[in-house]
Length: 376
Ligand code: SOE
Image (cartoon, rainbow, N blue to C red; front, side, top):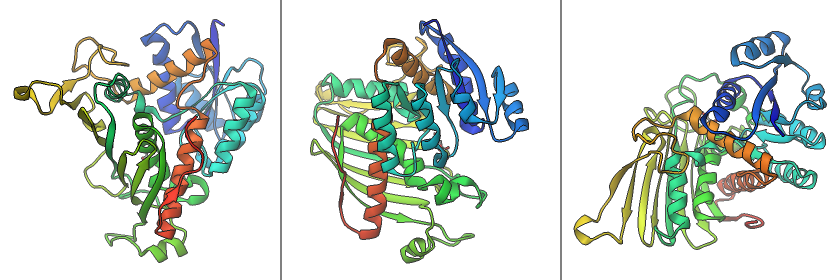
């Protein structure tokens, strides 16, 4: 295997991010293979050709089924709205392709579980675009938990706040349940759930409250209105219990003025703590209890080449959104070359979708909802 040929299905915002990441991934590190951006699929011949030309793909198509059937394609990368993910992924798996799929993997956990089972049976490598876990500071936090430096997980407090819903198109696909599925909980909350479980292990149950925004500068509609009108969630809060006994509190909001892309968490453990905010991701804070008493407290760490996924020895140069996307593809390609699973894969994404659905179910019942199954 000297080259992997990629077909990208969807040339929008995520298609651009993935195209940049495919170009960067094999340059930043030797992956043992080259990556060929072979064909980009979009809705019309004009949009596909324009995106392929701009984003550096060798050709363009509009028929994803025909592209998936091509023997010269090794990887299918799905960047369409989530309501199309299942059909494309199942066809790609059936054709023996390795599949990268943007999150949320689908809008229903039964579909996600079917996709995971088919991929497992077919022996293809899958990975899902929960990219933030590959951020150097978060990967380092994972290392601190794995090597015991932080001790036992105690509490995980996280939020993902954006202002994307102010002045947004009410008819965009993300605003409709039929295409976007869940609102903030499935869109940005799924990222928080992925990182929470990667760091603290399985979430076993949740209790939640959700809200939908009224038009104009009014507040939230009532819950009965949200449910009666089947509105997507624009905001939500939930509590969680982890299998290891740790507790979690989560909040998401797409009407959070001034927050930009504020994915942030604080975690407490028996020997230390970590604070992280994506908006200032090159500086995160750690506290270690085993330091001398006159040195205890939070210190600011600057990500650098000593950290997992840190690209530059010189701290402060930074690891941006495209670099983090490239790192996720480095993991994906290395897994394919080695014939090993990549993470997070369809199994991980199916469990995240089950948690998203449990949050929605709890918001209706007002009760705690258990998450089916358990860790692998
Ligand atoms: C939502 O605004 C969004 O684009 C998510 O869909 C992405 O997954 C996240 O990385 C940035 O915000």
